[in-house]
Length: 366
Image 1 (tube, rainbow, N blue to C red):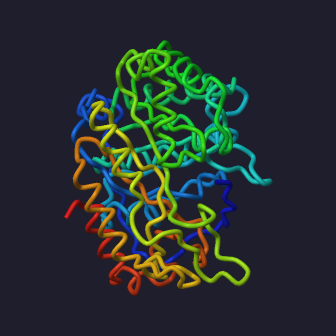
Image 2 (tube, rainbow, N blue to C red):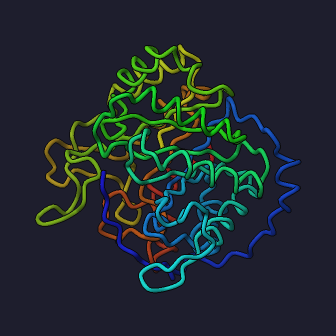
Image 3 (cartoon, rainbow, N blue to C red):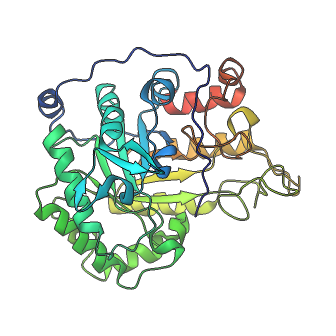
C-alpha cells in the first residue's frame, strides 16, 4: 500500500546506547561466511524513515529494538532512487535541498545488526514490477557493494521488491522474477533473495504465485543457488494499511480471528520445503496499546489475536523464516494505528505496557 510517512526526527528519551564496535569487514566475511540460517526463525520489525531517504539513527532508534526489544531481524525499506543514482550507490545525495547520507547511513545499521547477530532484510520499497529495467542494475550495484564490504553473509537478505506492480499482478511474473534472480547470481551475488507477488503481496496470493512459478519449472528454476525465500503481507483491517483519519480514531478490523489463509500458506510452504517471511504485518499500536476495532463492530480482541497468531507462527519454525511487524522506526506519528515504536518522549511508560512485554517476548522467542 502507498503510505504517507511523516518525517519525524526521534529525539525521544529512549536511552542512549554506546555503540558496539562492529567487526572489521574481513571479520564479517570470515566469521559469518556462507552462514546457513535454515531452521532459524527470526522475528523483528521494519524501520521506516529510510523510505523518505533518511536512515534511522543507530543509537536512538535501532539499538533499542535490538538491545531492549531483542529483535532478531530488521527490515530496512529503501527507495532505490535515493540510494542509487547515475548507476552507482551513493554515499551522500542532495535531498530536499540538503546533503543527506545514503550508503554512509545505511552501512552503520548493517554493521550494528551483523555485530549483534541480527538478520538484515533490505527492501526496495518502490512498488515496481519484477521486470522493471532498473531492478537488475540496481541490485547488482547494491549487491556488489555489500559483497565488497561484508563478503558472503547469509544474515543479509535482499527483498527484491515491495508489493510489486503497485498492487496489480504482473504479466510474466514468474519469468521476470527468474530472469532478475539469474542476473543477480550471474554478477556473483550470493545473498538470499526474498520474492513476493502481486495483489499487494497479501498472504492469499501464494496460490497464484506458486502456480505461475510451477509453470516455468518450479521454484528450483528461479535460483541456481537455491537461496530464494518468499514474503507475504497482512493487515487485519478493511482498507489494508489503515490510517486513523476523519472520524476514525482507530482502524476498522475485518473479522475477529487470525485469517485461515496463514495456516493454509504455511502448510503448503512446509510441504514444498520452502521458507516464507511475513515481511509486513499490522500487530499493534505501540503506546496506543493493543489493536482494536475503531467502531467496535465486530468486537476485536487484539491481545487474543496476537496470542493466536504468534502461537501459529511458532508451530512452523522451519517454514516461517520470520515475522517483521510493520510500523517501526521513527517516521510514524503517534496516531498511526500500527505504530511499533517506543513512544516519543514516553519510553518509560511504553516499555512497561502489556503490548510491549508481549512484543518483546515474541521477538526474543520466549
